[in-house]
Amino acid sequence: MNSKELLLKSMYNGEVERVPWVPFVGCHAASLIGVTAEEYFKNDKYIVNGAEKAFELYKPDGLPVTFDLQVEAEALGCKLIYSDTNPPSVASHPLAEGKKIEDLKIPTEEDGRFPIILKASREIVKRLGDRIAIYGLVTGPFTLALHLKGTDIFYQMIDEPEEIHKLMTFCQKISMNSARMYIDTGVDVIAIVDPMTSQISPSSFEEFVAPYITPIFAYIKERKKASSLFVCGNATRNIEAMCKCQPNNISIDENVDLRYAKEICHRYGISIGGNIRLTVTMLFGTPLDNIKEVENLMQIGGKKGYILSPGCDIPFNTPPENIRAIASAVYGEVAEFMKQDMKNNLEEIDIELPDYKNEKKVILDVITLDSESCAPCQYVVEAVKSAIKGIENKVEWKEYKIKEKESVARMIKLKVPNIPTICIDGEPVYISIIPSVEELRKTIERVIAEKGL
Amino acid sequence: MEAGYGVRIDVVSLSEPCSACNIIYGFVKEIMERLKKKYDFLEINYIEIKNLRDIYSIEGLEVEKFPAIIINGEQITAGTIPDIKELERIILEEIG
Image 1 (cartoon, rainbow over the protein chains, first blue to last red):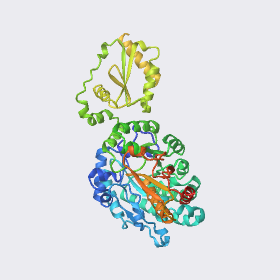
Image 2 (cartoon, chains in turn brown, green):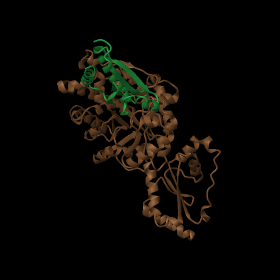
Image 3 (cartoon, rainbow over the protein chains, first blue to last red):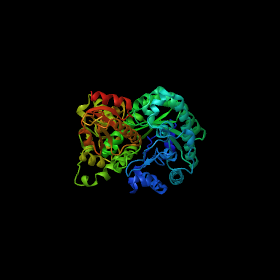
Image 4 (cartoon, rainbow over the protein chains, first blue to last red):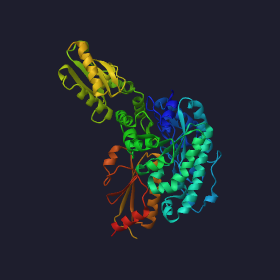
């Protein structure tokens, strides 16, 4: 099963052998290839090169063509302000400035930046589409309605709801047409990105969003593509209403509790994606912070119907080593990553390992990130403590936290690929697995017997 | 109205927000412009966070979700599009 198959199986709520991961690379791709965000968003070659660079560096199972929620708005006449390091911002709202819905036309392949984006999409599908899943990102109808109308939409939802229904009917057609255009380029997944739905209540969602977004997912299904609903912001109260719209997947950000969202989504047979913290962890954190966070998320998400991803698009200046650290955790290659990342710091450290076979005790080296902050590490340490109850005189154990460089050197010397790992007498036995107390106890007792202790 | 009513609004955002925060920030700025037109005494400061240390130096910031609006040291919003009528009510309350 290659990366693409793995991701799609997970997206359709299947069980897989490894958690798939999708870094939402948009303007960050510009920093990877040394251009500004504005240059990147306006040039198909930069978009393609950026995706290829992200593929090479981050070993993703899926990638978006790009991440720009202003493409439709711009093609409909909204003025944009471009930035060197951020996605563009909408600076005018035609429907708040005298235009009527009848004055606007549904953007086609020829309008705005669609020719650039669709050309890039075709090329990315051609270059990467046999190995990873390619996502086409479409601005959701409610976010688009806000772009066109401005914040008065919130008052109009109360005072003139029929006007908003008319607007949402129009925006639905646009989103559906954008989905069609992306599907025609060969993408595997259509993500309807509607972050502004986090700003409204479940009853408003049910009245003004669900009737318009549900047919879009039905259309995507009809075209035999997978669908996802991306929502950023605190959408906790809307998760169930979102499930009822029947996408294949819902992707959430850090404002929503993954455990809670997963429980609801899985009840509806919908997979869940998310929700690495973008700022505190990815942008400002260290590689170890990133490893710790994704270990915790993968523990919660599990291997059935869960896709690891950031909460939204990755900021421009996010350190690539932080994203590579995430990939190392996904692939169980933390030791290899640490070796490369800390190359110079590790050279002077020489770890002397015990002569395990001749020791008068069974020695457990427990390699963790930190059992106080990494949930899987904590479970492993607790399993060890419980398993050795009553045989403490025959077993010696110690936790080695890889946030200390001596522990990284030990991890490498013990040939431990990933964390958390339990080594028994110098052999990595439980690699990135939390054994049951009974199983671990039996294994230790067997080694005790073999050593004649 | 004349200046000197002492209403200070801090709009705090990340220097590199995600797409969703960027959209909300755009709306917050528009709302601030509308308020400024109506209440020209308002002192509006835009603070863009470039690193984690910045977060801890902002007076009144309690919920670290952005963009955030702080009026006279009290946080009013955290990562949401504000209701302009509610902001007006708070401003009028501040000036007594």
